[in-house]
Image (cartoon, rainbow, N blue to C red):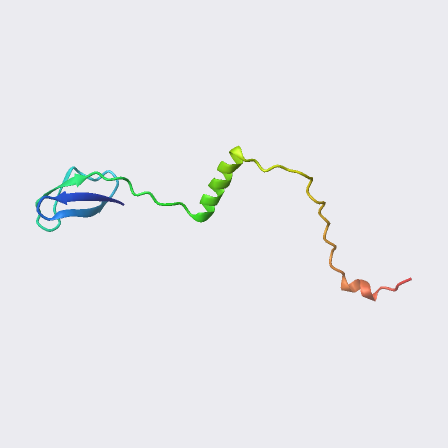
Length: 93
């Protein structure tokens, strides 16, 4: 649904929520049933969410400010497997 603005000569402006493409140049006024003409306004654009904004800013910055690698990444240590409690029962040399 899209909100369209109409203006009645007697009652003033009012909004109508209609399916996209259903706005006609004139509609009957909601208060007096007189002819109300459609008023063209700037579209209502919403902001994207913060994660999307951060990702878009990072992508834009990487185009002209790439991060430089000064050293190889540190070697990752493999995690040691947890001790098996059954091994405690085995004889030791």
